Image (cartoon, rainbow, N blue to C red; front, side, top):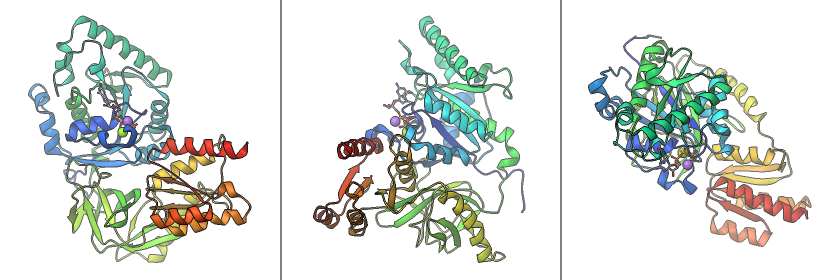
Length: 460
Ligand code: GTP
Ligand code: MG
Ligand code: NA
């Protein structure tokens, strides 16, 4: 493979942290979008990606450039947003597994919380460098805001009490990070970036500190990961989510880390029932600065170069397992060898998913949420077997399959847990006739609550 030291790909950045620390809002502020306002219950339940081009970074860091000029050598940043809710450990693991650098978001009013520690350990385990965003500084009592200001400019304008409160909370955060084996320091006071994590105070509401965060992400990646970011031709691509999209059918959202994808390419993926060989029918992306997980006016591409977050339209994607690699068949490749490679990966995934013959049915809009439901049902406190899983709307076929549990004399398992998917009218009708209970919810833990109450009732 040819490599050119001036040809860098976008670094992949993953935002992690406890629920409601402001991960999505920070991205909204950078994008000037309102993705968070439209999330059910205000929580993120899917993994997403946004491309922030170098021009946008230049624009958002203008004021900082005046006092601290710096070159942007990367073509942009590809940012992955993850859920902070405890159910979505699988998505945090997936996101942190494919990024070059992480942003660990901490709510300055709450300090370190359970999923902060979990995320910290994921990053540590994979030796992924990361930066801490100490977010919601605007909530410090009597904070005076200066929209989108570099953080030192903001601090210069605060009164003594704000400065004191900040220092107290910062000291406390330093202490809890130290208890978890990490040294931390304000990024502009950092004595040694190799032994201290950089902390950037931010506000997703006022935008303060965001220029600093963008600058530091560019600097750390282009200076300290240059080698890793040099573009490589060989395709390296991970499936983020498998998703039904009205009008497009089942699609996959992927992160292309290296190489080029083209329409018409033959690709091999890991499926629940064996390798999936298919042909790329369409490659679409949202506009730059827009979220891949939000349906939008997609841009179509004949070919697309890494790094990018891409939605792939192709036949036979229904069984593809998220979190696995996508392989491209090149003229030199033997299809059987590629399939073998994929098979090994699948055995690994299947061993994590239990499928017994007797149990409830589980359906969800994405594989990520399906995995979260399966994890919940497997947990020691719940321990409910699952006999049938599916992605997409609840159809008559799914009801039929659930109704079989009556024949097994297990009426409580004649239940479908449906997360974020519609139930067709015929399916509901059939469920009423065959005595199949369909539970639906738009927020995953509401489904957990409903189901727990139902099972308690039955067991009494
Ligand atoms: P999950 O994805 O569900 O884990 O949450 P999140 O980390 O993405 O947080 P989100 O962006 O959903 O924000 C949670 C709440 O905190 C929302 O009500 C936001 O308006 C609020 N919030 C986020 N950032 C800030 C901030 O900087 N200042 C203030 N005052 N509120 C914030
Ligand atoms: Mg979020
Ligand atoms: Na939230």
